[in-house]
Amino acid sequence: MVGLRRAKTVLLVLVVVIASTIANGAPLDPGPKGSGAAAPVGATVPGGANAAAPAGATGTGGANAAAPAGATVPAGAKGSPAAAPVGATAPAGAVGVPAAAPAGAVGVPAAAPAGAVGVAGSLDVKAAGAKGDGTTDDTAAFVAAWKTACEAAGPSTITVPKGDYLVNDLEFLGPCKGPVTLEMNGNLKAPTTVDAKPNCGWIDFTNLVDFTLNGNGAIFDGQGSLAWKANDCAKTGKCNSLPINVRFTGLTNSKIIGITSTNSKLFHMNILNCKNVTLENIGIDAPPESLNTDGIHIGRSNGVNLIGAKIKTGDDCVSIGDGTENLIVENVECGPGHGIAVGSLGRYPNEQPVRGVTVRKSLIKNTSNGVRIKTWPGSPPGIASNIIFEDITMDNVSTPILIDQEYCPYADCKAGVPSKVKLSDVTFKNIKGTSATKIAVKLICSIGTPCTNVALADINLVHNGVEGPAVGACANVQPVLTGQMLPPACTEIAKPGP
Image 1 (spheres, rainbow, N blue to C red):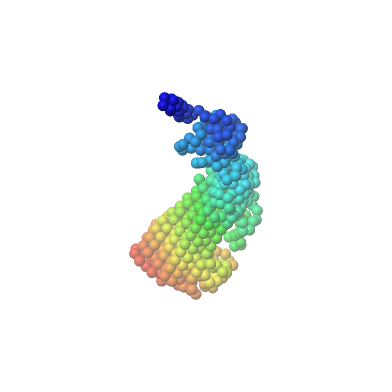
Image 2: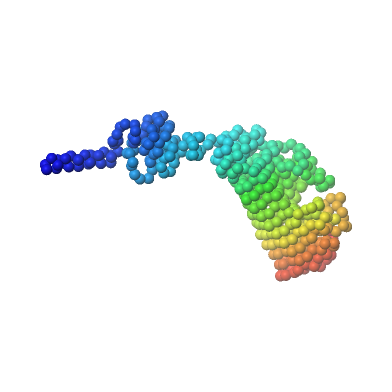
């Protein structure tokens, strides 16, 4: 009986010692198998180890907790796994949140170095060789960075640090394997040379889905002053021999935010064949003498939103071409320039219908036109319908409201032959301000295909010139009138020309 009591006492003491040892973190078994101690730097951790190896160790077992270099972890310790130190590698199969694995580890994606092909991440154009000094040709660096980003399986970001990057023609071509973001903090500069490059762009973004361009105020400088002098577009009507500054072609579900195009050789921005694309906080800057430099041209696109833009240029601030549907243009400041226009339409055969265009909450100042629709005489059949211009302020604008279906800027148009573009459901609403010309409202519809359901509502346009107060002139149309009407509508017969 006494012996049994002594045995129980010894066993109890042994249990207390073991528990105390475990609580203090001391290893029970110094041998390699199942050891809770961290292996030295560079050592291989045998299968079944419970602690993660320190930085540089190669893991082969399953660990429950990551330990700092040299720390001891008791076998089977419970609780949430601790974070591994920076640079530590987690053994394959570790329980809990995995630590960073060495590049190439199976089943665990590691952060790849900039420029690694096929891996999502962030790429810096300077790391790819760009200088950003304004004189070195940085084209190759942008091409290399884009290739890597476009081939990545997951989301990628290309960063452009502060600087001025001289680049020749660049095409950011898709489709890409994952979404790509171009994060710009620097500016792009085009060569000053004037080369004939019909129907091309300087910077092209093509066939992209879920693309984002964060400009952060970046400038795309076309350096086009020499080109304007060589541009004979006004005389010949051949206006596509110079590069467009920035082209967005075939983009879907994409955003263009905070960029400015300046001194383009031709159009500043061209949006074509796009779907669900938003442009926000856009800048266009060129002097009035910059010929045929439309600010933003939109065509054959559905669901484009232009929200917030300041546009100064030598042609239309915004021009809306055939095939445009469900377009919103909002909070645009336009001037100098030629105003905001639907068209010109009907110059070419097989043009697509224009439907669902809304231009609103905008300011037009010191321009040669306000809001207008223009179609060519002698045109093939076409359609433009459901067009609304509303809540627009005019400041010293020539012909603030205009429909011109005898638009003929060059000598080669078929004057006297009626336009076959059918205009319907067109509304000018809550348009106010000052007209630089006596004719403030001018509506010339086609005599062969008359406009239908043209509406004027709440118009208040004043002319203070020596010619007398503002007037409204019409031809081949009887608009629907509601609300205030100043000047009175259709008191004169409208004639073609300025």
